[in-house]
Length: 390
Image (tube, rainbow, N blue to C red; front, top):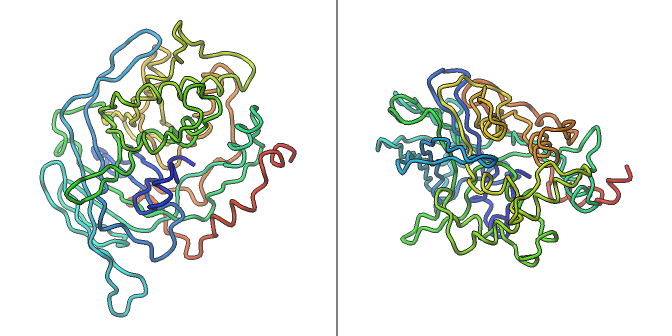
């Protein structure tokens, strides 16, 4: 489910569990970039951010290096970071829900104070920020995903089951003035999100770039001939998004090569032939796990992976890239992996969230005051075999 519950540590510490990352030029204010991080999947009213965690957006300017069939991005050592931290929640008199004070440290060193669940947010000349409970904007037919893996064939139905229907998340929404904060950097930026402990020994709990890298592309063990018994996602979460360590890089590549070959075979033909070393053409591109956005282009609802797809085909990107809140990334991901765009689009039968996100700050819609029990809903869902028979 995008990055919800992406490993044992994430499940054990939901306040540090990043659900999704979204990056897009503001549709409301041209010249501004919107960064959205959602955390705490299946949050209920009263859920709060952890005072022991720093929630961070990291951006680096990138350029494109053409390398034949596997283009890659080269990122600058210059980094722009927005780091949000929170105080312990307090129970104000006359209020039902606890309130939290938060601060955001911007790339220029400015410190912005705000209160959670204030729909107006806090604003300076260069940054506007909101943090609080919101309806989860992500959507996916999880039973179809599981059935596809179990049965080794595409098992999506015309009408899918959005397992996140009515679910909430905690969210951080930043709207930043591009010229003032990033200067001459860009126009292409690599963007990642991470949660890091705030103690004397900072430890990265989670990092997220592209959606569904961990929960769809990396999660399955059974196709991996090298690391079939390894839960790789916790190791992957520890990695710096811009500096992949050497110790486990071979394990990540083996898992990607094996799983990407599985997806490519789902339609009975090979659209992504491996090289002489067995390397899948998408492996290195996906290991560079961050969203890429062109801040000089206007907002687009339908732009996810468009910059990367254009590079793979040798064409020019037509949109801003990044990822908008309403983009149907599941259909795009499966179409890319299964046929590389050389066949019909693969659809999971879920085309929008419970309520689509808006185009004005803070973009995400109000939370569900009575969200369904996600564990009970998942337990009641049909098995992969039952889903295939429906």
